[in-house]
Image (cartoon, rainbow, N blue to C red; front, side):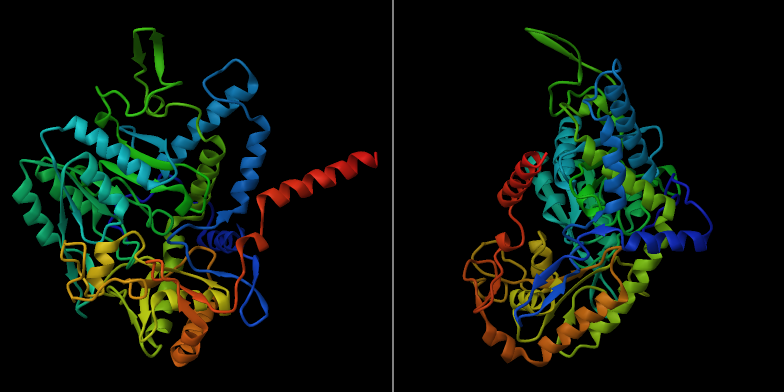
Length: 512
């Protein structure tokens, strides 16, 4: 688990057996679990969704709560009619819940921003570059998502990538803390902050974020944490066992927290914003505007949230966080850990399947993210076959973490951009990548069994499956079926749905 001292300020509801029953009730309360698609063999099946690392499904109970709240809908920034007053109150409550979910004390603020961690990290990179302009170095790790790498390069300056530890089996583990300490010492006079993911979106490995924060603070630097992958799966706290272990900035993605359509979340020390003009300006953040001047309000988070907020999304995210907190993130973590262990054992038993990164939970803590390849079959072909023949949704390619994926594959780039270290071209058919299974609260052992049995069949009949597919030849590494196709418009069309409603409405009026 993440080395948090105090995991949440939301008190779990009920006894442990009661909370387990609540967890089981939530497991089936997601939109899209019963969605069916036609398969290449002519049958139809409900999908098995194993792509939560990219985006989770949405909690239906949270949607129901939002619909009830939106009966009062109006814009915020007013107290003089009921709807506006209620929306403003609920929006403040949403901020409080988000802060409580990660144990944020009164010296932190919660800012809703964009649609995920990418927007939050770009915002905070600009803020920290402006606050500490003499410090133009950021240290991060080799396992980072592009969202926790490229914003620092663009807005701050030099980014130093620290390597990872090897576990007893020689597999990539968490960040190498010794190498990190040396990098901090080397760049201490120019180091602005250390930016690290709480859990890798490629291997699922969990990093010691509070220990990293302490190392950064010892050098006068800050600590920024990307919690996109971890927040829905394990307890996360911005506090540590001691004041020097507290996180300075933590960013989360609502769409990875069972609330697609919600904003991203920045949880940051209030002091980081003091004396700086907001990165975005507009309505709702000013006390006074003249034709030649304007005065920004002092209140946080209001001054950092220009414009009309995404109220339905914020309410959905807050309701989901509160639900998870009342069930207990300790139970969520325990449940996923058991399922991850089961999946690792099932997948490791398949001949020719290689799992990447440390995959024994007794030597490396991890969330339910498992990446692998099958011998003799491209990752794009395996992913397409899982979908087309078994109705199993997984992801492939590099998961927006290209340097890390290439390193795990032994194809680390030379920096020329033309070829990899092994001398093999990354062409349309050979684009390096992996297959990723990522678990969510809705997944069961039966889902893991379905994936394991499908992968076993693919591994045992590689020539048969290869003959069914051709490379897409678009540089993605994807493969497409030679005979089977299910165009998106066959499942749903926005324009057809609108026209259907209009026709039904016309008929209803005519019959009155």
